[in-house]
Image (cartoon, rainbow, N blue to C red):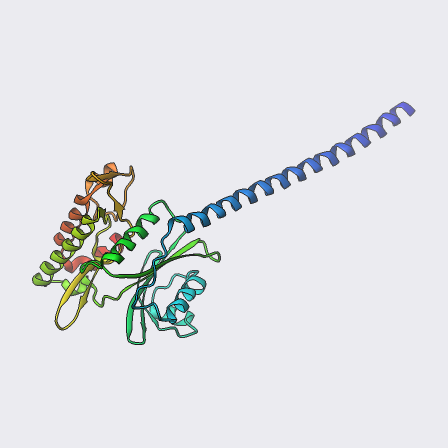
Length: 306
């Protein structure tokens, strides 16, 4: 009996020791897992910051807004207060604009919002785009934007300033803010059922595309929503306003291969959709497609194609 009791006591102690050892191992494993995950997240965050600082272009302020102190306030407002929300109209903007900054709502599309900025007699469009991450094409967009900013082509929208800011209080990680020329007319409604305006529109947009091609860029997302018009009593000028998908064609080459599709379904040519092959012909296809559409039905398919 004493031997059995001895073995029982010994077995009980062993079980307690084993349980304690198992708990310690589990806790150590959890601690190691937490440390590893924290390290991974820290590395990703550092890489993200490095990518932004090394590969994005913070264009110098254009003369037209260099001395305008309000513009920085608007940038701060966008990054800190607007970016967590999806603004869809003027009423929603007014609710958040408690400082009554000189901005009003123009349009929104997916994760992008365009505002009108008007201060001391100056008018600009301010567009901001939220990104979950800065993807591989982002530097292309900013390089193209900077190049077009330097040249100031007549049929390409004038870009005054571009800035990328990190944001942490939303599912998105970065917001890119563009201050650009304000164009007062939506081409869809303006050109509807007016052959003369459609001809002018086509001529101006093709001129803008040619300017891009002279610099060895292709647009790759030409559609009505990426064009606009500046209309005054004396003239009408149609312009390309967005370079989000733009790509640089290598020197001595006429096309580029990506292996994946870029652009908006409905405006993409077969080569790019099937092969991920891009060249100047992609933009010409899209422009011909725009011309071929009945302007009366733009509003019907715009939700799906824009």
